[in-house]
Length: 640
Image 1 (tube, rainbow, N blue to C red):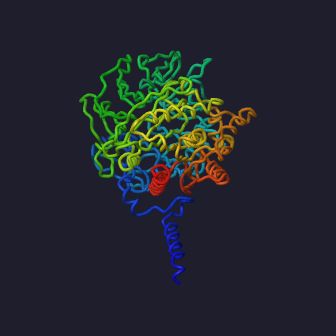
Image 2: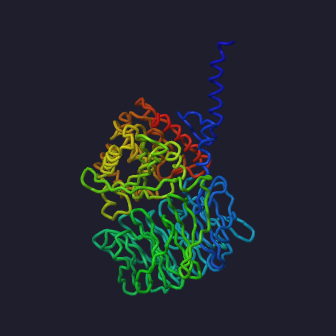
Image 3: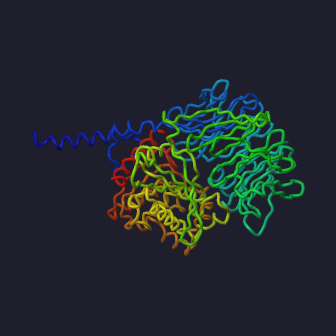
């Protein structure tokens, strides 16, 4: 009997480890998460954010999303610093919302199921809290915009074909009024604005990060005409709105410019006037005050979103407000034309909602999100880097160094690569990643390799098509910089990334196998050909523009040659793969084939898959498990 005790102990330990894993998760190779680890990490799991969605059209109140329990839900904040009052109570996160103009008696919000991104639109009535489904429940419905008269709602839907974003209009008070306004070919269409008289809709046709067009659609007949002028060179138009007088359209554009500048398009003659020619940064977004006098806009200055004001009539710059150091986003004027609300994110504070009174030059903070009871002064400020790569192209990176007094000696490093690929790592609050800095003494480095946004339209094209691996080669400059830092340990470097960043992580594990200690791939592309074949229909053509068309034999051969799944035997270091089962962008099959290929090659791979998530984990319990598993992985393979 005594000889059986060791075996029984092993059984009990195995059963205990299995019991702690929620039924919605598939966990392979991940050790048991101990109560001690949960307790140690606990306060880092309680960070919250608050995101601004709109002013009440009459009262001085805000509509926000924040997480009170498992997922981000809709709340109303009635005073600066007031307690957010919940409006929705679902198990799935609310993705966006807007008040009905003029009355504010209900809001329309967007929500999907299980991370599948087939968003449905819902109406929530404030009088009784009743929620009504407005769309068909199955198709993908995006970008709702209320008419100025508050009667109609325009949005795009894939209802007709499953891949084309057609333009639909409804009266939200009566969902049966829903009607197809005009058929549109492709998945890149979106509603931007209604004209002041509600006769026209401004819509964008997105083809790629380097090419898009603006169109006008008659709100009664659905007749469409292209607003932006055709040219021999590709032009990208971003944020766009009708002017308050209805005589022009304000837009951001890189027409005749390396960066996205703000322009005014005269609707009578099509003449374009550049309003920010003296600014050598991207203008990311803007909002014109309801009285038409002032335009607030955000410039992306080395990744920091900076708030600016200009006179709407003559384009003259107005004094900049004094704000806390951080990135501003999601601008919207109150109906009183003097208060501007926005989100602000910084290294010291998570995303929170503020307002600025331009006449009184007064800043007010409406929300104060949890930081786990920690001292914000302990959070590390970022360092901005410029690095020369293999062919002389300059790339940037953001570095966070742990406190050298608390963690003396050379420290391990995590290189975290953003997705997109047309995205950008930006300085900001590190949330859970502060655990790596403050408790484990691990440095964080975020590269912006070629193809990243924020550095001009030509930089965006440097990784397109057959130049795909040049972005992977850029990481060599990052690794070389790490090796030159005396406080870093170049023999203890890990790589991680999500989506396209997941592909980058896999590719780096192959290209820099002798340098990297381990890697983490979150919803990453493992084979470009299978990815393009299996990504959702409404995305496929948009992604072909970036990665190449796999139907072309030469391009297919190239994509197969650079795909990590075809080189799994070269990944000699431990890998952790994380995936959502319902991911419409990078299907679960991308992770499954990568895990299988590494196992066949005899490699060491951990796998975590959530059955109720999509392109990343949005539910707290799943995100907590992922983070704790990541800590275990890094402790075993990076820190030891």
